[in-house]
Every structure is written in C-alpha cells, then in structure tokens.
Image 1 (spheres, one colour):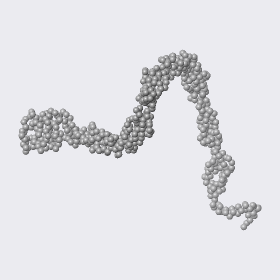
Image 2: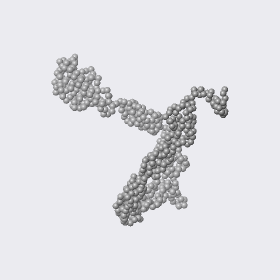
Image 3: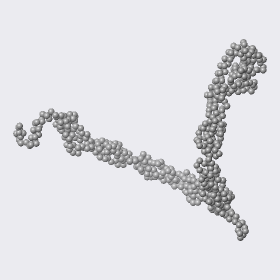
Image 4: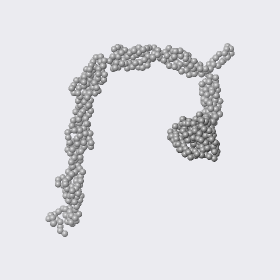
Length: 607
C-alpha cells in the first residue's frame, strides 16, 4: 500500500488521511449512488441568482436563499447544499414585515390582520368630521402603501333669523360642528320651541328654529270655587294659580292650573256638591234626611236581637261624615224581677244558643261547643257517598235557637236510564250519584219527546223521562197528495173487486159492467189518464189540479234538503207520463169491448 503522506508529498493530518483513504475506496460506489435534488421550497424565502428558474439541481450544488417579499432577515446564512438528493439545512431566519400602527386624529383605524405585511387599514371619522383621503391602506413590503387620510370638522351655514326674537347668537357665516347658537324673544313674547340650536354632523342646525308668541290666558271661572293662591292678571305663559271649592263642595280635577302656550289653562276643575257617600250598618238600617250630600243627616237603627253601640245620628260635613259609624251588637233583653221593687226591668245580655243536634252520616256541628254566641255559625259535612239535603250551615238567632233546621245525609243512587229505541250520547257513567248528568238521543227513524238531558235528583230519580217515538211518515211509501174538498169522497177499495170510479152527475148513465170483461174506466178527454188502483197500496185521494203535490218526508234528511225534493219532483213528473201513454194504448185497444159509453169527467177533477 502507498503511504498517503508520500502520495501527498507532505505530512497530512490523520483525519484527512482517513477521508482520502475512504474516498479512494468508496469513490466508484459514491459516484454510482449520487442523485439530483428537487427545487427547495421555503415559504418565507426565495432562491437568488441563476437558480430561481431551475427545477432540478445536481448533487453537490450549493444555492443561496434570501427572505421573500414582505419578510425581513433576523440572522443566519441562506446557503444550502444538495447532498445525495437532500438539501442541507440553512440557518437563515425570516419574519413578516410590520408596517406599524397608524393614527387618525378625530377618527378611528381598524386593521384586517394586524399591522403586518398584507394587512388592510380602514379609516373612519368621529361624528361631526368628514374623511379627506383614501378610506383604506395596505401594508406593503416596506411601508403602508399610501398617505394617511385626515378628518376635517363639519361646517354649518348660519341659521335663519326669528320674528320677534334676538339671534342667532353668536352671529357667523360658518359654524364648526357642535357649535351652539341661541335665540331670545322680545319683551311680552314667549319662545315656542328650543332656544338653542346645535350644528349637527349632517351640516345643519337642529332642531328647527323656534317661534315667539304673545301668550295671554283669561281669568279662570270656577263656579262655587275661589282662587286660593298664585299669580294675578295678566296671566302670561307659565302663570300658575291654585283654586279651592266653597264649603260643602268638593273639587273634581286639578286645582292647580298653569297658563299654556296656546293661551289656555292646563286644567278646568269643577266644584260639585260634596257627597259623603252611603253608610253601611251590619245587622241594621240607615236612613238619610236629604240623601248623602253636605248637610244631610244619617239615622241608625238595629235589627231585632241587636242593640246600637254609638251615636244614632251623623251629619255629612264638608269632607266626610262627622263622627264614627255605630255598630249593632247581638243582644236581647231578659226580664228580671227585683224582689225589692217588685217591678219588671229589662237588662241587655248576649244571646246564647245550645249546641245543635248531630246528624246521622254527617260530621258536625263544627265547631263543637256547649254554647254559641248570637250570629255564630256551625256547619255539617256529610260522609263519603252521602249527599246533604238541606242547609249545611246553621246560625244562632236572637231567639236562642239555630236556624234553619239541621240537614240530613242521603245515599243518592239513580238506576241506569232505560229509553226504548234510544242510547246515551254523553254524560256520567254508573254509579249515578246526586247531580250526575246524562244525555240521551233517539235512534234513526225515531223522534224524542221530552228532555234528553237528565239529572239524578235527591230522591234517586231522574229529572225527566223522555220517549223515542216512531216518526209519522214512512219514507218508503208513495207520496200522499192533497185532497180537493170539492171532489167526491174516495171509498176504501176492496182488493178482490174492480176499482169503482166516482161518477160525474152531469155525464151519461153508467151501463152495467160485464163481469167477464175488463173494467173500462171513464176517461175525461181533457184530463190526464187515471191509473188503476193497486189493492195493496194506500187509498189514493182525488187531487186538486191547482195544488202542489205532497212529497214523502225522509226522517233522516235535513229540513229543506233540495236534492231529495228534486228527486221526488222528477219522479212525480215522469212516472205519470209513462203510465198515461201505456194506459192510453190499452184503452184504445179495448174500446170496442166496452159495454158502456165512456163517461166524461169534470175538467177540474182527477181520480
């Protein structure tokens, strides 16, 4: 092996010798495995020089990075080397450029993403100022891209002069925002509106200028009243007066009045005759001499069993009844015979009642005592499933007895109602106790007679018993026609005999009928054909041609059912026509076999 130091011609360091030995041994292998690098990507950096446009870089190539637009270097080297397909790490550090905050006098600045590169600053002025310049600026690579705007104060033109007023003051051609001017009305005039106007942000003074008015109110006139205090004439704006009513009268409304801008008073009170109002005396009566107004006298008296405690008369004064309302105390007079004077005298004593009796199946009387004062009340309460019959409360009266009589407790149970051809529609279910309520309805084809709503009574019976009766008209029968009172009566038909027709007294005599031949009906040539009688149907009454046919009634239909009536009307019109044609053909065929001449009928009668 050749000494490395001899090859180099000088003594080399041990580390370098080892590197050279390894390179000579691995040289062919390293060249075989070397590969290119892809374009390096750094979000905050960009390549410099000739390497910017390249996409592939050979092994061992050294490139240099610099901070991208909008970023600044904070130190380190931007160099990196392609080593076997991988870039070595560079030490360059970059941060986003910051333009710094902006200041807008008399305005505000808002930033979209802080004050760094790419952020947008938006400007707005305070109320009363107008923005001069661009409304938005963007933070560029080195600074804000544009000049910062300014806020200029709003200006207002001078407001108008006001008749009978001094102003506006101060007087100028232009006024800055928020400047204030004032008006002052001349003597004897009152300002109507605001005396001060202010220059607003829209360049106008607000509110509108005032006006100057001559205000004079007339002297108030209050019947039965007089002025108590306040201003004297002339009554100008805001003059204040206070009125009061004369004795015996009461004021309705506000007694203090103020003269307003429209030369009227703020209120107009009335002095009405004072009324003390009615009085109430429990267990007694009150009588008034002249109603309840000022000067009237109220007289008090108690009911039987009570004595008056207090004055028996009160006078209605200027503001109220002069004195306290008396009371009626429960008491009766008991006779006491004095052994010394042998005279009967009456002394008041409080009424007492003995305890009322107990009631079977009831709790009470409550409260339970041996004796009860006058007007005391006791109560009874029936046990479960029992109903009280009578008054549940009794009161101790002046005769020393409770009234009314004690109640009784009843077991009330009504049987289930039975309504033939009916059924329950709503209401209570068994058991039916006192005041249970049920409602019944009839089945189709039946009509209720009586009250369908029933209540269980104290005697365990229902308050009513309705019936469901069959409707008078059979909806399946033929229509019944009205009878002409001037026509002959129709006799009942013998189902085994031929139908007998009524005879017109003015016609030819009727010939005897051959029993072997078919019956021939006399035909009125001017009348409608008469149909033969069905022995199984109801007898048909003669029809008045001037009357309307009576249609059968459908009990299930609603009154005035136009559809049903229309169907029956067509039935009555079409069927007789068809039958008339058939009978006419039959009569024509059998005319030669008739044993009698046809009897003409009266024109105004139809069989």
